[in-house]
Amino acid sequence: MRKFFKGPGFYLILLITIIIVVTMFDIGTQQEKLSYKGLLEEIRNDNIAKVRTIDRTVIGLRKNSRIPESSFPDKYDFQSYLPPGDTFVNDVKAIEAEKPRNKEKGKTPETIVTADFSFDWDIQPPQEAPWWISILPFAVLIILFVIFWAVFMQQAQGGGNKVMSFGKSRARMSTPDKRKVTFDDVAGADEEKEELQEIVDFLKTPRKYLELGARIPKGVLLVGPPGTGKTLLAKAVAGEAGVPFFTISGSDFVEMFVGVGASRVRDLFDQAKKNSPCIIFIDEIDAVGRHRGAGLGGGHDEREQTLNQLLVEMDGFSTNEGIIILAATNRPDILDPALLRPGRFDRQVVVGVPDVKGREAILKVHSKGKPLSPDVDLKVLAQRTPGFTGADLENIMNEAALLAARKSLQTINMPEIEEAINRVIAGPEKKSRIITDRDKKLVAYHEAGHAVVAKLLPTADPVHEISIVPRGMAGGYTLTLPEHDKYFISKTEMLETITQLLGGRVAEGLVLNDISSGASNDIERATKIARQMVTEYGMSDTLGPISYGNKHEEVFLGRDFGTQRNYSEDVAAVIDKEVKNIVQQGYEKAEKLLRENIDKLHKVAQTLIEKEKLTREEFEEIFATA
Image 1 (tube, rainbow, N blue to C red):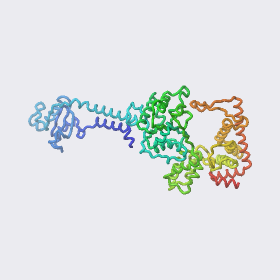
Image 2: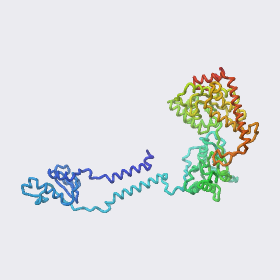
Image 3: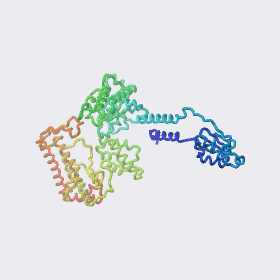
Image 4: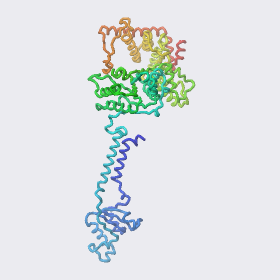
């Protein structure tokens, strides 16, 4: 509602209302308006006591009026309009001549005078209104329109900015008293905080650095995947340092008009100089800092001018003492080399995906203020979420709280958090979907094939949960989770991953004597791993430890054009043959394992058809007793 009263819609409605009131409202509408015939009828019936005429307008009082005569003509009973000329006088004389008292005197219309009328008639000379009265309504309308247009333009410019203020910086400044984010609010990034602590210490006590001749980095680039906490770290630096903090997005510089972005960069640094020492944080700097002169058809002139101005401001002839620039991006490969050189962005801090210890610390931060039941073990949840970023973990805790509230629970239990993890990984369950018995059997054997093969492979991740309830785009899933974080993967592990991915297709063919399209994603992933083994990791015995297909530096041409073929057609044929052999060997190994353990496959699949879901403990028990 508050936005409505501040928006242009409210002022438009107000303007229309005022126009209607000015043009249609009339104070005289409280009195009765008589037609000319009605007026003559009132005179004929001797109902009129007094009338006053001004030009062609007549007002009057009736004989039985509640209005005292002393209030006339300020107050009156009726109003009417007269025809032109002497029509009214002649009509009144004709009516009065017909009345008995005038007939007895022998009066005729020609001899009747105003003294013979049955009412008092006061004839006033015409009053000429001032000249400005006639143009007053139009002037009011024009003034209101100008006011409305000014307010509308003010709202369109973003609240108070003038029309030509688009060259000004759109950075938002936060003062220390408004911020509450500190390093205590950032978990799972101990090394990153240690790197940035140096900047905080310099802003607080610069003397000890200057005495040793040390120069604090002018710019720090935070690099990492989305959701790892780059922006949160920048807020924490500003909160710890206690200095003004300017924040702006890279896209805020780029505008339709050439030169506006450069003007905004100049204005930003002018503001920063007035408030130094301070921090400037540019989020998603790749929007303005891309490689110059790149792309099909040349570069982007406006963005390149903005980047040139940014380069000059960061390290040019002018000195910017006390201004530290933080920037964040998840695409450092496309940034211009001049932007990354020492003197501009002297330091790059990689904010990576947290490890198991970091995930546990992040879960503790995001579980504050949430009532957790005693069965919730954050250490177990951290082990269950390898590869999750801080944003993913926050989303999990929020989803769990929503699920608990939906069930009207007083605390957040472990099953709600487990369901939240599955929702983030694969999407919500679709229990209402109608599945035929044939499809249910197909999905059960497919997922049982994945699970049994994973159990039989020595390096495969243990099975955590199996389900044939559709979830997201999948008809079912087999969730395997590593027992610890992995930073490297061996050739054996890759081969066994391919074998596990093909276990579902193999189970379909063994039991149902038919195959389905449900294994398309499994085959795609297995083929991708096999091709990476051959072309990127040098794991082919035939081709040897050689990388095939150099990645081109030009990323603006698209992913398909981003890789150059540096090998012949003969080598390409060998690569395809090697990829096929790796996938085929994995298929044959999965088939051999399932044939030797067909009873276990049947037992797991039949239990899945009955229960639709199996936990790790249930699967282990079935596998051991089958």
